[in-house]
Image (tube, rainbow, N blue to C red; front, side):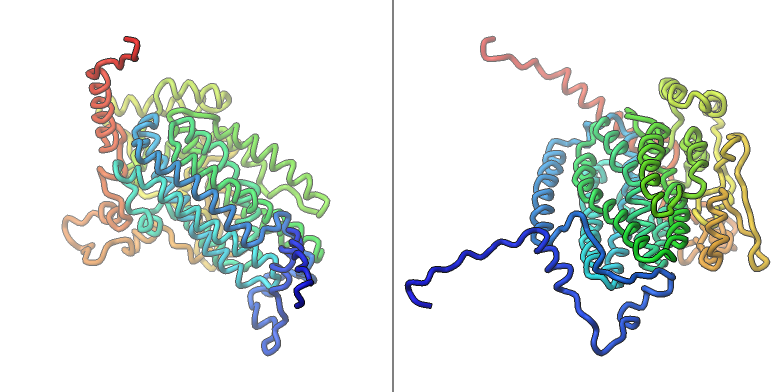
Length: 531
């Protein structure tokens, strides 16, 4: 180069050009292996993809932009978490009942985030198209980050409250955590296309707003700024995840008309599986928030009936209809949280958080939110149980329930049109009878019976002697199968479940608040400079 020549400025690539280099320029055609050998999971589900280049990611997020964006969010998030911890924010929540909801969160939802990370790692290997592989890779990192930030935020509570230190073990062993675990075990053992429909569309797009909008608002209303911080930090990621789910649906439907019935079947299945899973969230919203933002029924109306209805109206041009049994969810919205809380109350010795009966003021709130069901079906039940508690003979379930073969909830749900009649379905397969909590769960089993006959149901495992720690002798004179099963599940009576009024968390909270009040009243008032 001569001294008189000038360097020409390098033109900055546009976002679209950067994204094209990342998602197209990194692809290649295999030369010494057939594509079927490189991507062995793509064919067996029956999905047909003719042109991976038609994939479009509306965010067009590149790696440099991704790390910059996530780094900014991390700095803000951990600054808030640090301030929360330094200011003992765990004592600023409404009361210790709220903390019990965090035990459900760390035991169930956080583990689901990690399982989702595993699933998207698999997709980033199994998809042939570079665009969806990159999108799956970024989402796998998102999901791992969500699990980590949730653990970090809730760790401050674990220093002062019981029942949060053993969550990985309990997730794999506790009976009620088999509900979220079986959801992801089902998805992870499916093919790549079904997995992404299950998680990115049916759960993320259709249902996840119920977790990250009303629940996080409830956390803020109850003074939990740590939970609010990681919730809203994750929400921008969830926006991308939901967009990915919708893009997957449209991409596959535009690739081949033969994909439509397969995808509709997956939407039917995973909508119902996700809905049954969210029964936990319904109960958390209506019963475990001392200060409530909205009822489960109101949230379902907004985020599914209205928003979901608009989504499926838009997808109708592709031939997609509303998920099967969606009308059942509308009928059940007035009863599902009350049914489940009553079930948990009866089984409170066998869960990892204490349970309580709602106060008169809380029952009045529920009467206003559920005018068609609460006073008629549920207030009399709670009133009677309060009378039993006052008499020293509290209601408790000492028998093992029938477990739904598909969703793994106890079959305590009722008929959609009759809250006084237990909904019980069954079918025979290979000479054996299988039980279900609903028509939706029965349909899922009947479509894939070989997958669900292998479900590891907690009650059956107890009866078969598989839910005891090594060294336990079932023939011993003092052997108690329920006590030994709880030990196996990692649930410690008096520390994890039981009655909230006598629980260690309630006693400690009362002591802490009394001490704080006495310090406040003993301190002289602070005078200003003029005085």
